[in-house]
Image (cartoon, rainbow, N blue to C red; front, side, top):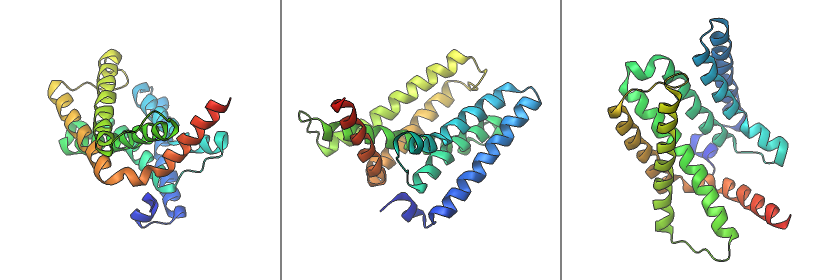
Length: 205
């Protein structure tokens, strides 16, 4: 079962939602440029670029991503982009939801790459329990890198809210990772196959 099946939406419905969210990002990008608020335009531009990755994968590698997964990725970046405008400051729960969703996307991608490498290698045979542990560790490691980047950028592109916020971010990053480890592995099986094909293609060159 795909994520699209679970959501109960047709591919065309999901893609219309994605296009609508992308238009919101385009509007934010234009607004940031027109008002010389380049922090807004930078965040919107980066988010828009991420939402276009599925189209690039289809063009470059002939890989058509499930519409549910495209919506999952798009929802994660739009949540963070909208939150960085003012919602993070107003609602603590919004920050928690955004980090949980984005962490689940990172967890899914990390698991898919790890599992594909495991299947590709004749020397790896990883117990299922360790795969779940890997998902959580991988997400937390990416979280550390992100927090370092936040401080390095000094609030120009992302806003640093303090130590309490960092701790909360890590807690809900872990929540997103655990959700994928328990319930979400099956939804990224097509990512596993895609990464597996790329590993085989690379090894044959």
